[in-house]
Length: 373
Image: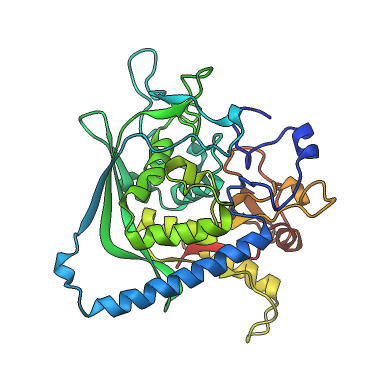
């Protein structure tokens, strides 16, 4: 298995042939759990959301909103990065400064306008995070520029939008508060490649904004309220198999689900985001489910609204998914061509699938997508 790709990253042919689909084993997919456990986690999320909503309603009449801070501030220095459940060769050795170049300069934060090709997943199982960063860069590059800047002290200043889930609107919405993070320049590295970040790439793409934002997202759990941490804890009871609650990069290494990606879209852009189910059946206008899907995707892409999907796991005895899509992996939908085929981008920044028919797309992905409203 090539170093530099995650378990939800590229596998060698021999690794792919021997990989099992045992849902009882740990799966670092970058797209959450195997299908059965994903459903359990979604149900658990809904239960926790309802419980929190009830408590919030009870407290709302007593809460003086003037006491709520307008921003949350933290320093993200060295989030936990050594996952005890990960293969040892994939776990970085230490923190270092791989953004520093031998000539004394530093990899620039930006190299022109941010583009999706400047995001490349490393050995961390966070394909959903990297796919979302790339999708926002592809559609709303100004949002990326507004999120992060270099400070005079050598650190980075990251500003995210706090997001809360609205049960009534079934979407993530900005609360109006900002999350201001001071992100130090140290990143996890492997000793045999000290000049290269182990996680999101920088040198190979010529810009540092993706690994800096990845580190900020890893450290954002430092700003969580007790309720938000409780929600993650309840989900981890389903997902974690009794292991300690992960934080930092280790939390990101557990993968993401469509709801996580919707939340991140709101945090990055300040706009509401939600997860939709792929259309099924005919609508009131007599359009088939496939026609609805194509027209919905085209309309959202034309409005510069990112679309993120996750592939399913392989069935027993199945050697690969259609058009070499990687199983249990997050992708961005980048285009619908004139033939109605769907184009996907792999957050590895290579090995993208060939364009898919709607039938092939439905066969390979889980029936949900995340986007901005």
